[in-house]
Amino acid sequence: MMASRALSSCLSNKKVFVTRNVPTSGVELLKSHGIAVSQWESDDPIPREELLKQCANIDGLFCLLTENVDSQLLKSCGKCRTIR
Image 1: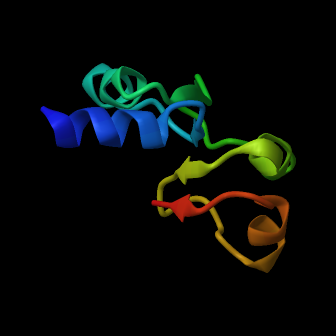
Image 2: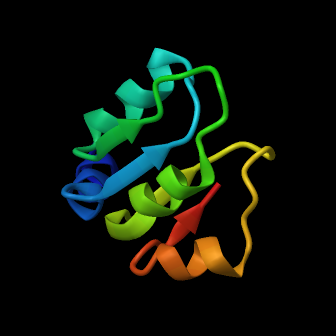
């Protein structure tokens, strides 16, 4: 219980961007720890320019192998600490 509370306080006010539709349970788990989740709501791949724009102010990125994680994307993710 105490570890869970410590984890939640550490993660609260963090922002994660999800590049595809994922199971609701995954998004709800992130939200239960106070993480703000925004998500690309289409089954189509996110356009590159939109991905770069969305990454500007996030703490974490959850993407699929279809997204090209390269130096340009990493630079656009200024304060991002986690890419999965």
